[in-house]
Length: 205
Image 1: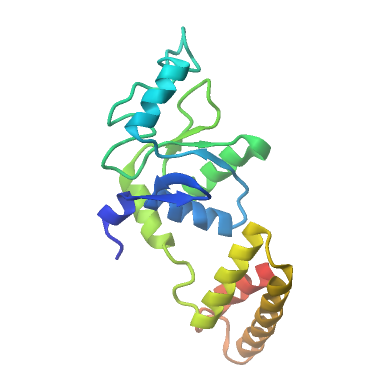
Image 2: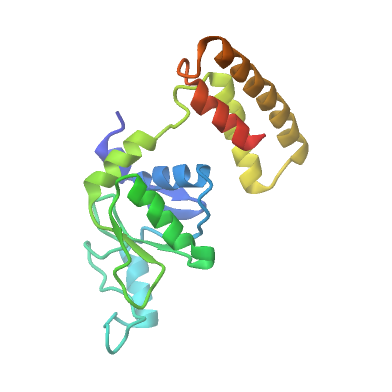
């Protein structure tokens, strides 16, 4: 099982710094076709200090667009924990779509800055850790070749690169998808992760 310390470490999701726990959940949301754009995640103390210099300290009445006071418990910092706040773009309702995915995964979130519709704060760490462990590798029970095809295809698709290679991958995934369907007719869908594998391949072909 992935350790709590590892889930609290920083990594990147689409170029934005987040805890590893958040990255795992966001990767799962993206794989589930949830549309969202992450603008800001975990911040260093120095980054928060710079924001205060630029925008001033947040005050709901006198400076509603200011930044939180730089300290280890600030929403985007939460030093030593995984459940920092994230700024999720409101474009096409992406902030709410991601919040629904978090809620469906058992992770409580709140939009608790009235002047910032994009500010999505994770209000408890343990549910985030639990969900990340469950979502860490949704392909872990798939055959190795299927995992390889899916991951390569998703990476190329997300980067909008190498259309020819993507077409090759789609062909082999389509062939495998059909073989799973045929096997399921003989001995059922509930063996060898057939149902999940079939739908993963179908979504990409």
